[in-house]
Image (cartoon, rainbow, N blue to C red; front, side, top):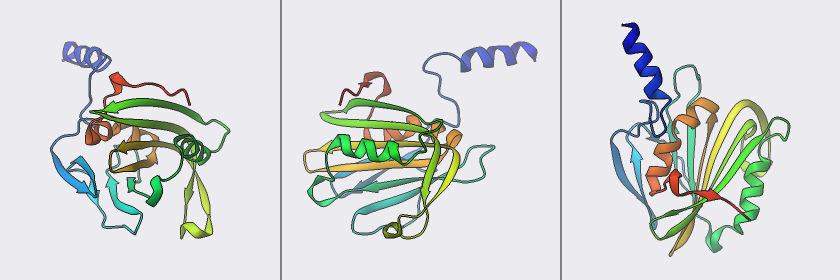
Length: 188
């Protein structure tokens, strides 16, 4: 029994190992306008949408987290603004004290994408966005993607408790064809 435990610990530390929590499992192909995603069946489409929010998915919480995460998918008329401004806005949604962030650029097939990963205290929006009211949520993480397609720019924003979002990083990338190994540091 001890030998099996040691082997499991050694394997879990190996590069490329994906834990059961990170494994995307069965996926379903979903189309949102010109964006096609392979969404894990564990992500629940809440039906919450509007003219710019194409879909909202509830991301199951991992053991130890009490609250589910959220993936919101957006597409804006006119493209949604410059990459750098969107990145700055997302990073700015976290309190600067204790905030850590990493920004990378990758390819999903022929398409460029930018991935913003931020952790720390998230200033979570509460109520209608027009009110600009937030509440601080410590121990949070955001994975946000700008995906540039021929027919539009799409924004995927996953937020929630640190462990829950971190566990879905591989599944999020796979959903749109991203690959962590091909990403490079963003030089914007």
